[in-house]
Image (cartoon, rainbow, N blue to C red; front, side):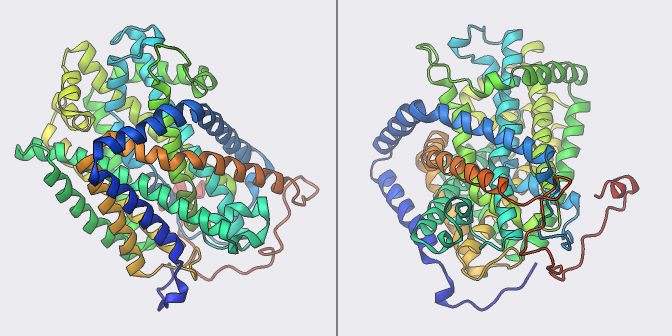
Length: 546
């Protein structure tokens, strides 16, 4: 999409890079000196204090973000065309959906799709009064999974994506996360120290989130090494896997958004649906359908209640803080930069299209994935007596997904396909974020410019190094704590930016029919000259504009 230009030292934003590196050097030094003491301190500060004191706020913010997405979709704001009335889309809707699904939280869906339903149902928190493994426990677990991997997590990133897409594509704001501050402080803020600080913290938070996801993936792939080669997971195995991922996602990042990232994402979407279909047909189909139907009903009926669940009870053991609210601040860590990445795909589309492709469809996919994989593993555990709980207790959550295929036909083939899905999901998540961070580190970057290769390699290297240290010294617990530490401040930042945008957009002039006037910056602007994305060859999809 654009070409690389020769970059001079003055065209790089050193503060974005240096602050992130310095913060992680300090964190990693503390881990190397005394990992246990550092994690104990951080856990007490973040989970026991910050999450207990502020976790409720993250739940409120996320619910408001879901409402924000609905409002944008159903009001005249949804008709606003990104890039102006003459802008032509550069990606088909299917290409865009593939990129959205695979560069967002797709790797997390793959990791937890079979694990969370089993963990929740078989180890119920005491405050619920529900017996582990009971019918009520199964329904409760599916409800929680839909909450954590459905409409709410995607809303956190889509809100920032909507705001940034509008500001960058329709108001000519700079291609950086600090453009979110414009509705609050005016256009001059993007050249201020506040903007630099915002961009630097966004980079730090995203690096923690991506490195954490890469660490999760390495642990999951290590269980595959054990399954196929009989080699027990170890620090060396983790590092080798991360090194292999490093090579793959950097190769994809170097090729750019229009080449490697788009191609990999769309191939992975095909594998996603192929795997879903296989597990649905080969698994307990009737049970999956029945459980999914009842679980969706419970999720819809209880949505507001479970979205605001805080469990302030002595026997709760901070369950919502360790699960629901942990995920909320985790998504917040992704929000600014994942929203910035979304800008590159949105040109020529309306905000309603944006909500559909970036929020509604991926959320529905996540719900279906958990319904199929969760239903399969719960049926095997509860109805057929397969002891997946022992596998979880002895080998960890990372071992559950691949072991689930042992109760289905063609387990070896299914595991191989699943390994490909896991690998591509990790690659597309890391490469897209490396490209976005590289763009924000480059002063001349815009939504059409591919940043310099060495900046992509720099951020790709940071992801790999941080992930290797996490999984070597901290495991999943360490990853979760660092990500929460980085994401909590983003709750306050995101809600302020959202409030500023709402106030700002309400003041925009409207036409007689209630729709918004075209912004002066793009009202008469020509298209950027790139060829329009072709329509789908499928006649039905083509009629829908796909």
